Length: 473
Image (tube, rainbow, N blue to C red):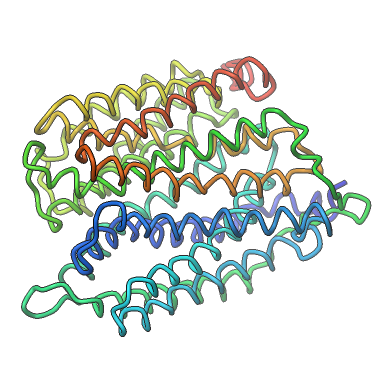
């Protein structure tokens, strides 16, 4: 049973949520920097697409290694988070991630690609701990029925970080800290990543000073063994998360290279990074809308008003961030309208909404593969807004009803982030063999799996399907 102290603190969740949301923003920003590093290191070290995707392989491979270690400890010694507490786990993850950022300094100084990969691996290990602890922590800060809404809100600020990263990070590496003659130099990554390390440590200091509710279980709740794997929806959810992260990371990793293709737009990196921000900005819009749509305390009419206001406000934020004209991003309004329609068809049901969004992404990917010019570009960028709710919905559906196995199940779901390491590698191989445009067949299969998982949960997890009557309709 959860510590009784939690019940007395149930009204003090606002400050903890704000604090953890700041952390989500920072790790979203740093994670998205990989999409800048890939084309940068590809040119710097004259890499193939396959070799450049080792950036994602090492970073997201760390998620698998770290989560596997956590899971093995949990089934032999008991859940580490149960013993240490969520706060200590979060702080440890931040310190490890900050150390990974610091390692970019020697990697850049010696201009040695394997050192960059090692730094990314350590950084990924730190974010692994954060994924296991922070996501589960947010899901516990309130009722299970509203967990998807809370996670969508925190993930929205994570997406805010991923939206800013291509513009700010791209400016720092491609322009501000680049060589005076415009040539590529490894030293351009030294100062930015030291800055990131410093900000992470400041966030750790803030979290250490904030009183966070304790969700440690009593001693009788410390469980060992493979109990979490007895839940079929968890096993399916792990595979769905593998495909989701793999698909999202693969698409984001190839956007700059995709837009460079002469039959698409022929853009250079400096221009493409702004469109990459639109991809991640779409995820931010969709997550804010998802947080509202999946909120059970709002009526349908209030949801419509709040979603419209949120969409307009976030669109203006994105417009102010990217170095593009209104006419260049106005196509996004079409995707926002389509996103609205998809949410209302989903009727605030996490599983049903997940299937609808996955189906739309399959169509958009096929469009990007068979079309040229602006239509292909718009199709690939529109995927971001429909990725929006996938992580939080898959995560909460997968760990729904696990009880004392929640943290163990969470580590398995986070382990599935290995998809971000494996899928881009396969797409990189196809890109080398058949071209960038045709390589997007790999993410198509990923989203088909997610579509099926959503349909499965709609049928077998009826308690997570929010009805209109619960929403106050």
